[in-house]
Image (cartoon, one colour):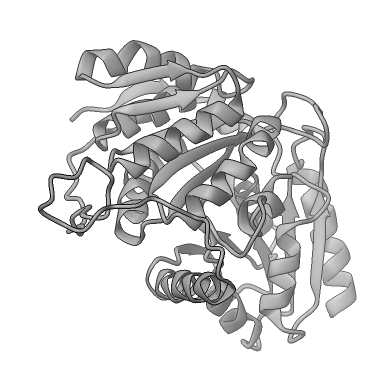
Length: 355
């Protein structure tokens, strides 16, 4: 299929439809409104259903119902709206239901602003709701990658019976880039024989539930879920390493910020500065082993994490380094985008301290 020029939010919606999503439940909030608007137009054309719910709380519980019936379902929102969905997300994780959740992050805290940010990292990867659980969190850096990860995200959700989140930001959602919706071979997925699709006496009753009154039953259930998480960590961790082979300083960044860092690396190369980029594509599971392996290399002198926040992913980077090399941070928040010149200044400060 030839490439088409699309806005990021609309590309996400079309990718979901082409991945087999037929049920979307959402509530408007900037800067992701093009997703439900596109779904409202397109889903009826393919035999699907779009419902604008009365609230974000209602939307995520509708996703619970559709996913519990075995359908490919999704919702989208932006930071304050995702906060309202947290109870339902915990229920979905506890009931082991597959679905896709899109968060086009805006600045906070509170109502904050409508500009791009990355300050929902903790909420996404540490479990923003109650209880012991994880989302699989995918962090695209281009619109084409958003398309690919939406389609992959549905497969991951179905394979492991776990909710998957696309963690984008307002800039990725609003920019336009050429994308291609190529035919892809999906995963060989297990049948959804657990789904509550009606009982005719021909199989055990399907019960969708996250309530366990007996503490031993609940502990056994959580342990089972965590064994699944171990499989996800072993099989689904995704990371890109750019120019790291002889880098003296490695910059860790994801999403929109990683695009800025790439330009910094190219400029630094002209000045004889050896920089590399480690870009986590899965924020959970986090690429601990990749970062640690570079921390053990003699040519790497230090790490710098760059984020559109006051410093969240840097905690996981620092833990991954394990004290083997210095870990530094530079960030902007409130909707401000890190400037390449300012990042280079931070690089020079680090170089002065590690020589």
